[in-house]
Image (cartoon, rainbow, N blue to C red; front, side, top):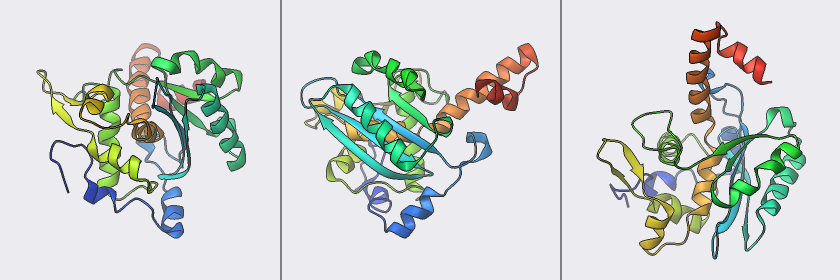
Length: 239
């Protein structure tokens, strides 16, 4: 059940998928550590379809639990954004406490303006962007391994969906010449006979708050050296 070349083990994953309502609620109330921003996460992960059979996906996360999720085929990416905004409204989450992490590559490049137009806080996610932790080659690799750690520790509640499970447990990784871990690309994954892993990517984006905080802390340390403003001061400026 556990492929050593894959990031996430199916044996671990089955223990956090399709949990009972009481367990989902418990995970939804988990707070992040202060190093990761503190408080209960109120976050969306959005992955936008590129072409053909690809899906646009929306995941709403509270604490460490996925509370809602939607997929869209052959649909303009703006529809996925509108769906996320409606889910936020139904959840009665204020804009000031809600974060959107959106795939800003490919189709996502032309949709980022909608978040600003609606007054949303958005983190533009680039799969090949620089990882906060240098043992990873890029951000999507870092995101998958971060989610894998939560799954192994049984500190999250995820949907029970066959396609999502396949995408999460089938993604392989390797070590490059620099000794860094690299998640196989979407194209590499699909060449092995799988569908585009859009559901898994959208889910990973919903759980990237720790990675955002690490990046913020690193930037804050640099700013403090230059200006004397610490991390808490930087948060205040951002708000």
